Length: 366
Image (tube, rainbow, N blue to C red; front, side):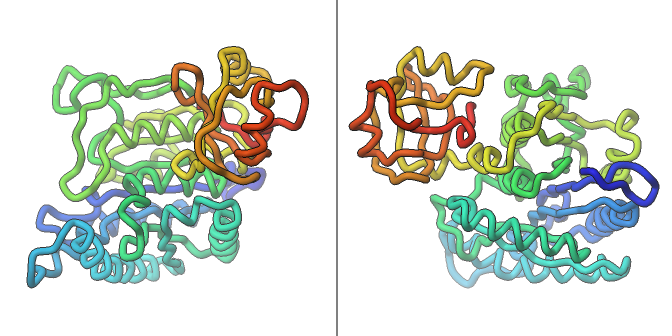
């Protein structure tokens, strides 16, 4: 961002994601000590002039610790019941803690569908932008009481990535129960912390498949989100949430603070390309391309997908809908916003000339 903070440093827009494993005790009750420490650090960064958005898990865990259902519930019913109870408890605690520092918080409950259309996406972005401009700290969580199972976020790691991309954040900080990504099992003393991951580098082979007791996400999800965000131009930090003063230290003295940094690409993507990058799950159809088109699209050149490179289509879509692009092998090349309908694309497939099927400005290559 172009503006400076009160101490002359660059003003940052920071998204902080904190999980249930940091916010709740083993018995499911809120961990007030950790929450107080988190709020204290966010308030300190706000005092320095930075903008903060908090993506907070913990509603379901807080609700689970407050009530025992009268009858057996399925997983969806449990999630809806516990989140409806826990979200109130969670936001009330945050409101009380932040008010002690003179800061106003606002609750943002969202669903995956809100990111599916450009109109809904921009409306949500505008709302949060207005909150920030008025000094409000947005506290974001998934609206579990209304979300459909098939359209739920994988976890709040995914949600935090969407929020960071949508709000053009400079930093996404994912607070976990370990210091970052290790080159082996974090519990093994021989494993070393991977301090930096270059944009485009894949370190997923180092990730141990495990998740926290109350959350849905594991380090594999965090790693995937971090890699995608870094390729879009956002710095992503994974660090231990209960480490003293971790947020402030990451901003003021990162070199001496344990963490893993996923380095951003030098040139950030446009906001619309960021939206498209996270829209693969909303794709209405598939555009299959030949090897020449696949190679051109994967190159460093600014290439649009032309009809001559299309071999077949699957599904039905209209102009403006999201489509997935696949190579002859079936591998996903990328995702884009269609400039032609499915019927127009099928009719022009393999032919020279005509408008692009997907223009470069509305195309994200995986």
